[in-house]
Amino acid sequence: MQRRRILFILFLIYFVFAILLNSVGTVILQVISNYGVGKSAASVLEGFKDLPIAIVSFLVASFLPRLGYKRAMLIGLAIVTCACLAMPLVPGFATAKLLFLSVGVAFALTKVSVYSTLGLIATSRKHHAGMMNTLEGFFMVGVLCAYWMFSFFIDSSDPASRSWLNVYWPLAALCAVTFVLLATTTFDERLAALPAERSPAQDFAAMLKLFFKPLVCIFVVTAFLYVLIEQSVGTWLPTFNNEILKLPAAMSVQVTSIFAACLAAGRLSAGVLLRRVHWYPVMNGCLVGMAAVVLLALPLTHGVAANPDVTWFTAPPAAFLFPLIGLFMAPIYPGINSVMLSSLPPHQHSAMTGLLVIFSALGGTTGSLVTGYVFGAFSGHFAFYLTLVPIAIVLVMLFFFRRAVEGASGGEVSSMNCPR
Image (cartoon, rainbow, N blue to C red):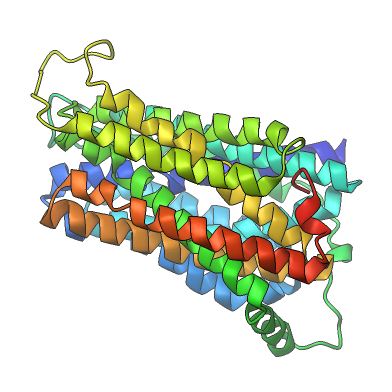
């Protein structure tokens, strides 16, 4: 019973952070309208979210067990609760920056804690894999809810309206309820204790040494590029829908939920597929599918005329076709993470998760900044066509990643048929 309660709380925490983390594209769209911020300037919100994730993860991931996973998650929830309350109470672009700074710091503390806590309550490797898949699925449900939740508070008839800020009242309440549930739950973290004779400096040095393994280097570069692509699309798709496809602001956000739904469906279906098919051809097929969607959908976005009476039935076909890239994109990140973690001994998983969080955050920031700059300086079409470059590089990196995995494990890991 206690294990189920802990699991429910972990899912709820991840759900909360999914909403907050993936609201950045919607908030960018709104601050451009509300505060007169340019696209390039608005794109820094991604950096305010992702850079703290990278920095805090780099500083604390190796010895977070010394702080305690429960305590770290409580600190994270307290931070985001206060930040959500500040948004409607002190509206402004600076407050939006502070919000995503807070979310980044809190998520850095939370993600490693959640992943590590799953390891403490798992009864077997299959049990752990099932919980991890469910956790990631819950995250995508949160992403999907974020688009609809924010769109409910957006006033499309008045771009300058700040009614969208009212969404942060229920979000603050959700964070507070989760905090109380976590605070009143008992955790047994004795199995996660680090050796008493080892200093925090030695913990940190062990994480740095892990980075210099060739396999790990190839993996983090691949993960960096993947997140760059996903955040480029996810962050700027609402603005693309609004300015290029001429959809109303609220509908622009709602249509973007198709992208999140495709990510969720892609990851759930990949969980079944990878039990029967080797991961490498699946990843390659997904990358080719992503490129095909870009090349098929973007030509349909040219010359779209504004229609004040547009509905879901009269929206441009590209509004529904381009988000399908999420179906092909979805399996790549959890797939390579599974292969990477399965190739390392269990005692290195915590440090590896820390490195993964760092480079994922850096990839997200880079993707958003580059896409925002290109979107503003050239066009939205050119910005999304540029995703073909990292897609091609990831295709090449996967070849070397597979060779490195086989070299490190004698082919044992690469021959597995499902994530572990």
